[in-house]
Every structure is written in C-alpha cells, then in structure tokens.
Length: 222
Image (cartoon, rainbow, N blue to C red):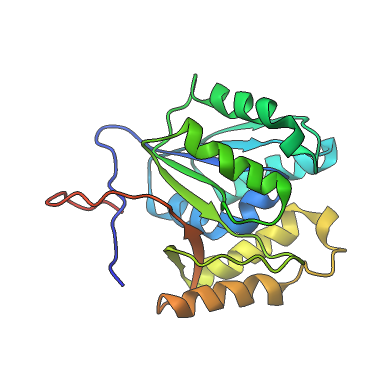
C-alpha cells in the first residue's frame, strides 16, 4: 500500500466540495475526513450541497456543516428536489451541480460512490464526473439495508479521537434519525474499524477514486 499525498494549492486555501443527496449523507460517508481536514489545515474552503430534505432535516445539516468543519470558510446550499426520485430529475440534478462551478472551484469533490444501491446517491455519482473532470473525486460509502459496500481504492486514516467525535456529532446534529434501527455506534464505529484494519490504521473512512494521476517529482502536501 503506497501512501499518496494531497498536493496543497500554493497561495490559496484547499477547496473542498461535498455533495449529499440527503441531509446526513455527507457526515455519515465522510464526517471523519472533514474533521481531519479541519484539524490539519489552517486554511480550508468548503461548500456543502444537499439536494433534498425537509426544512427540519436541512436545518440539521446546516448545523452539522459547521460542526464537522470548524474554522473553515464554509458555504452551504440546499435544494428541494424530490427525495427518492433523483433519477427522474436527472437534468435538474446536473444543472444544480453545474451551477456550483460558477462561484466555487473545488480541488476535491466528496460525493457518493458510483456503486451505491440508493438511486439518489447513484444519480449524483453518475453526474459528478461529467461536471468535474480535473479534480480528485472521492466517492464515499453509506451503510444501509441493501448491503452495497464497495471495494475501496482510497483510505483516509482516522485517529480514535476523530472516529468517536464523528459519532458524537452524528447523534448531536441529526436527532431525527436516532429512531432508525441502523443508527448506532456499533454500525458507524464498526465500519470505521473495518476500514482501518484494511489500511493498517486504528480507524479509517474508505472511498472509491476511479481515476488519479501520479506526478513524479512533486512535493507532497497533506
């Protein structure tokens, strides 16, 4: 396993675009990664885009964005697209994601992974590479009834402190989800421990990165 360094831009903040079909997708799939970025980088710019959700759920996501990215230059956008019907709203989803490029130029995109069984997640994963062709796209995984875990190609190690902080914030920021039978510490920490084992770390989040370029002789960043 070869560690790769995220090259940091010179003279400006690292820009990260996070996309979720539903409130809590981003935090479940990549909350530890966001916490780690905020912890490691003094200069971080981030944009949250959530495509569906009731006002109550979107308020939860708004709160979560600031909790998971403390200190970042953060902007958040919500849409009222039909939950569970994003394949039928394909054009609207693409237009919404393309609109981001008019005001935000990301270095890294964090969005659902292409093999996700949920139709809303999968639609976003299909569209992201058609809009962003020269950025790192990390596709996150979300545990669910479908049993659609991916074969990851990229891992972000998490300390025990960050892994447990992620779970603490999930409970704090998304009280509407606590009644769900899969919403518990064992699911979230268990998956993080499994992915950590796969990359010889205490905990980790795993992603699908379908295309990357190795540049020889370039100094590493993060």
